[in-house]
Image 1: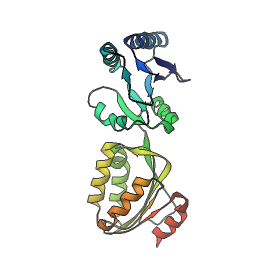
Image 2 (image 1 turned 180 degrees about the vertical axis):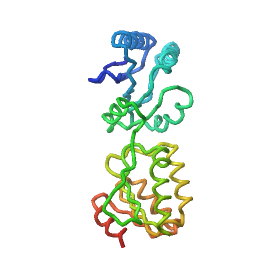
Image 3 (image 1 turned 30 degrees about the vertical axis):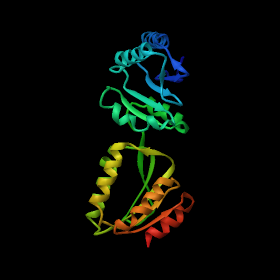
Length: 246
């Protein structure tokens, strides 16, 4: 069975598969979706909310699912996958190459953010926030939501280049807030490339985060960075600000 509801604005269709989906389930979904488009003269974006990888009851159901995707992929602009299933993590970067819609995956805890992203016209699942109140030689940013390669290209790279015109070396305060979700796979590469490009441009780096894998990774690679590196918990943000100023 596939439960189909719509957001209050009518701009987002929310699909919740339960159990093994049958060919009839997809036929019913296909008709309900098309009826909504014809009645409201709008093609809603999709939020697929599933706690596990979709299951099909026989090959006929799989064919019906593929038919639904083929019929609507050129109309739907955005699809948000909401799941904690590790199989679905990073699927957005893979599927993006095969369908016309922009795909993003979100964890269960960020269902509301997934709906909000699907409501927006632009693809802006996250961003770097520029922080104030620090010396000019400090690059101070906070990561929100899903960080993409565009965030590096449009904000962080030009910011560092501009500051390096005035300072021989910089300091970095990088806060990964509670609403941080993850890096898109393209951003992971850009993060690595950014670090290599500016390996000698930072004299001090303060990372503020409670995310375990980020804290462990920074501590592991700190000896290779050529800068003084310290990792702080979110509750220690003021301590990190004081340390990066000196």
